[in-house]
Amino acid sequence: MKIVVAGAGSVGLSIARELLVHGHEVTIVDRQASAMRVAQAPEAQWVLGDACELPTLRDMDTESYDVMVAATGDDKANLVVSLLAKTEFGMPRTVARVNNPKNEWMFGQAWGVDVAVSTPRIMTAMVEEAVSVGDLVKIFTFHQSRADIREVTLPDDSPLVGRMVGDIVWPPDTVLACIVRDTRPLSPSPDDTLEGHDELLFVTGRDVQEAAVLRVLAGGEPS
Image (cartoon, one colour):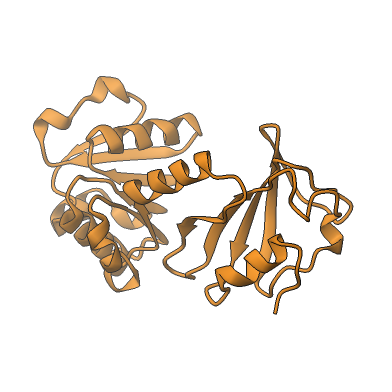
């Protein structure tokens, strides 16, 4: 894919380098000359300019790219970049960094954001996941569909331990997407038997209530 990363700070640069490792074509744009650390990502194209301004985006031939990543440290700039990329250049996908969780409500379709990534929220979820066994933790919400990714680690005394995946009835619009066992991700099949300390990753629709999933995890049936 062809990807623009707006913001060449530590976050933007890290994202760009990771994308380059995975074989993507990456352009990094930043308005600060001091941010042009070309040697740290020599495979990328570097542009000195303001991604919040239409002339900069036009000169970059932005409409030819697949994804815009707005990764600056300024939430206002990330919203403007996403909106311009989506409405002026019709970019198929926009991903925006949320610096202040209080601003997260703005990062949606109205501002051209397909996916909003809030580092504090993700870190909080990871801390909760790391210290909680048996708790259902929301990891991520997709802003376009409002679907959630949720995680639970089964305790040894869970009523689901020893049961086959195909015998468990999950709530409607709930999909068991992955089982992580001993650091190995497994694609669930109906014949798989759940074990203690399995990490279960679910994708749940926007209308799925957490309580319905918890009832199944407790050995009951979804209402």
